[in-house]
Image (cartoon, rainbow, N blue to C red; front, side):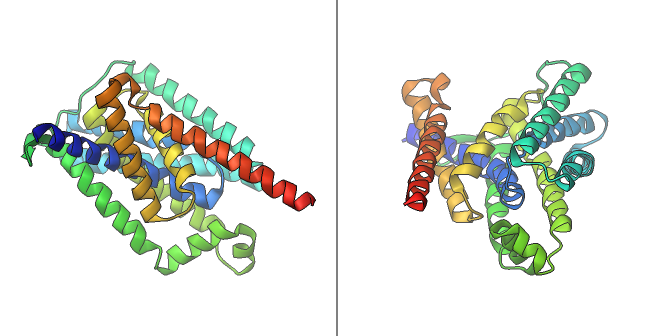
Length: 290
């Protein structure tokens, strides 16, 4: 029973990570319609900001520094790189490659500044072990699960607000939204800044499990891309559902086949999704030709 309880708790922890990272990627992707690889940066930058704040101040300062520094990074990237490219009508592929370069620069910059050594967030209160239905979970992991539930509920509520309706309109048809008077550029900045700030906070949650390294954002990048592509739309049920399913598959693979196989199911899901989409695109093209 303890083994089953521990597996269930591990699924919830992994699902919370997928949900948090997926939300960070999914909403900006639906608005901009290109995969912004620089969205992997706030996880790492937020974790390092929290680590530095813990070294010189306290936990509340760290929880404030992580989203704030990440938010400032997102606004800087938006105004210096993404917005100028969009004004030149750059294609999604050009934007994707540009954001890949941005993330590479940030990753290498962090490696030069802090080395590749693994650093632990010095927050004992977040590493206290709690017994939950016979399973062991740290207070930080429990806080991550709570944060995921709150975030999913908040995004679900946002869909019904005036701003949420405008964001959904942009995701449905960007040109039509512009014609109707929606301030697309302002809302895109708002979404990007919010996603980067939220990503900085999520980076703290991830760092409590994986410690702080320059490569922290790479695993988050893969998780976010899978959820953003497979979920396909701004649906809290789909994001939460796919996150839970991927967590079950990942935990099951790690338990049955070994920890080195934990990410194999996510690769399989992504590959199957891309193959299915290519078949659908081919069929629709053939029907259009007929």
